[in-house]
Amino acid sequence: MTELEQYIKSYFGVVAIDDLKTIVSLFKLTPIKKGEFLLKSGKRCDKLSFVQSGLLRMFISTDEKEITQWISTKGYFSTDLSSFVFETPSRWTIQALVDTELYTITKDDYKKIGDLVPKWSELEKLFLIRCFIILEDRIFSHLSMTAEERYNFFFKNNRELFNQVPLQFIASLLGMTPETFSRIRKKQLS
Image (cartoon, rainbow, N blue to C red):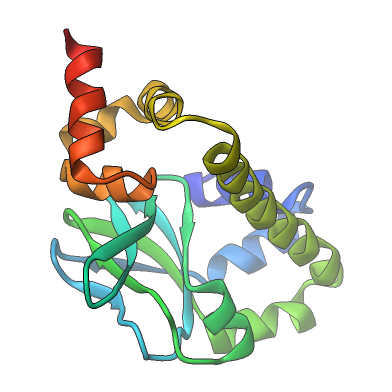
């Protein structure tokens, strides 16, 4: 079983082998170079991508700053879900932080899955619930944890990112100013 098949099973639940093969066949391996954009704000998102290797940053630019919403690592999907589903302009920009390999499915091929896989509506519902739970967990941590607790939790679960991602992106992801992040980091390292 390929990594993509394993991750689809983990996101979508129990999938029959034939259905899994059908779904995976619609994804195409897509390399993206460091600094290139998978999606730009204002454009319609017409693909769903799975990170095979590398890092993607999802962010929005305001007049004052850039706000990092998510950093997709190996084993995560990346898309602007609202734009992908409702075919509206994207709020988010998605950019490769390093050379990245993605398995990507276009919106047109995604729509075909319902005709090809009889249990697709049930599987898709599980996928969307999983996405919602990840978002819910992030909101909960922002509302219930102090900045230092968020830093410690993120560091414990994503230690390798601290050497791969500019720290201001991690600070933004955690809802902190770079100064607060730096102060907490200095305290943790001493």
